[in-house]
Image 1 (cartoon, rainbow, N blue to C red):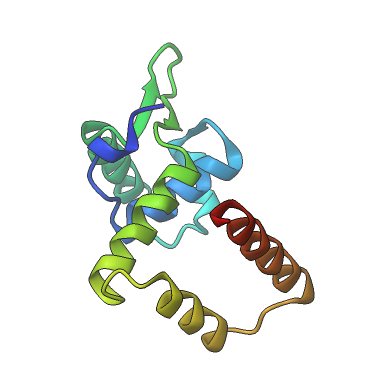
Image 2: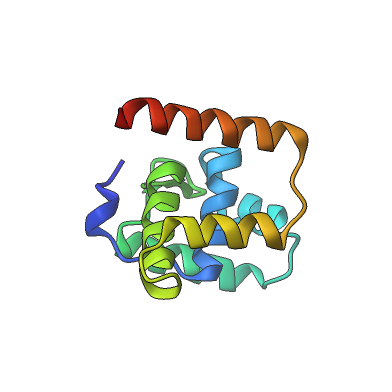
Length: 128
């Protein structure tokens, strides 16, 4: 995997393609296009993958007749980078404002609340 911090942030369309590659693993253009629900044209998906290849966001296996693309960045590293960017641009670096906004804006399951409480408890334990 490429070092995510040195790569450009993916656009919304590129992120949708990366999400397909993260969930499916290495995939052909046709597989990505179908997974996206054929909302975009096949050639549009192909063009995005070519752009993403040039940016270093994906790798391409050219050994077969059908090129197979694979994410060059992990989902975790991409999410980390995007959250830091969101924190800086929208919440002036305040993680608490981001968390409060997220919790007040969307319903949250009991399981998610338990996971959040566990994460907060772990953070508090480490800070002592």
